[in-house]
Image 1 (cartoon, each protein chain N blue to C red):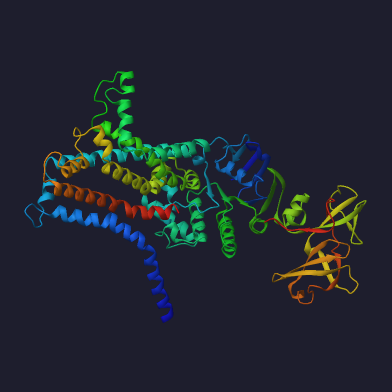
Image 2: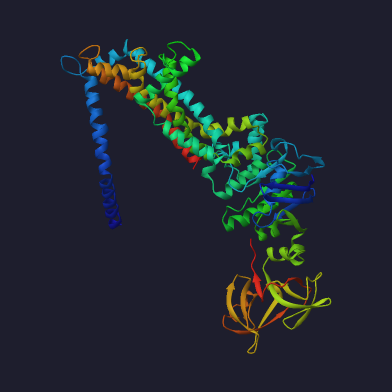
Length: 282
Length: 352
């Protein structure tokens, strides 16, 4: 027994050793920045610690930017999740292997499209002098507002949702649908009582991912709308670079802490549901 | 409630799944659809359930043509091969699913679910979720769910194939008990001949979308209508024989023919239990292998002239009739089926 315990102890040690590179990277990439961020967020002018910076982020103009970011991310997450799920379902049930491969491959490419190149594509298409704007005579300002930004974010969010939800849709057994029909259910009743509840956590997981992607996006928004649509990431950049006012670096860190808290709150809803879903779709 | 399949034809691309299948299942009867993979048995069942629409032909339930009736209005309970319980619902809600979509009250749903769970031996399991049950328990729940709406017909699509041997035997007996108790017309699809023979009132053997024979189990086994049925149901020896009038000469014996022979030189089809093996120093073969199966032992006898024959002997003979022993082989005198000559003596093992 003692031997077994010792071997287990040795096994455990070896396991931690194998994980050491990952732990080191995690410490460098996440641990140290988080500590710096938290310390900075609570450091007040003149030395010492306090809630001054965090309080500032709960006032204008930062609160408005925070609210804009949350709203934009929520809109992108909900629309992206719904559109992506419908698109994935349509493709997976089309019985065309070629279409499936084409859509999944395209989604893989588009989901990784972002930053300034993405902004440029949309500016060239729907900007004030964009090809489509000119062709359709849409006038100016179509793109440079909240909904324009949401449209651009959806351009990479919908494909991302397709990639995320496709395996879950594949895991939805055809027999469940047939069993529901056999019990007298309509197609809608199947989705209401079985399909959507089973897929719910996966849908929510996808929506959380889209929320995170939109919430953290910076370059596309900076290139497209600048200060015309205040977002928290743009405020952080301005505060860190002293673009507007000097000496507001710690407010930037407090805003980052706000973002972390919001992300954690969203994850707290998602993780327990995801655990249950993985058991159903196994 | 009777179920009638009339001239059902169904193709998938170039593959013909059903090729003019006609069959009537009587009220309260349990009929087993038996056949190898691709014979059309599941397609036929799915036509009755409404999940497949035949290209031509019709399905009647209790005299009414339901061919065009959607699956959710068919009044047929079905148990699927794979566990098809809804994973997000507990056992009670799975069983009561049909009542829920029909907007029955919670009290009615719960009491009906409890009643059915008692019936399948799972009283007290209502609050559990499917992933907390064994395969056999899940299929019992699926059976209870299929019965919840008191359907006219019960359809079982290889419900036992995913279970291990012991559970399979127990559950098939349970299914038969319930079917007799409820008197419900039942179609049981299986590729396992032992399963079909043990539970069914009649067995319908299918091949390439056509009905080869439909008869009570004993008749299918003892008087197979075609060589295919003879070979598919049970184990069959193929022994070289020569037809002479109404008899056939095989192993130096003359046996009466069952039906007509396909030619003069034929394969005589003989069950292992119709082969007698006796120790004999100058016998015509020797025991190649012996497989003890409890009440019987199956011997593989190598014949001197080439070829092999299988013989079933009482289990207690297994020690005496050991591999290597020189033996004589004789056949029980009764009418035998014949098939076109294929090979020198060769046994055909069952598929299922």
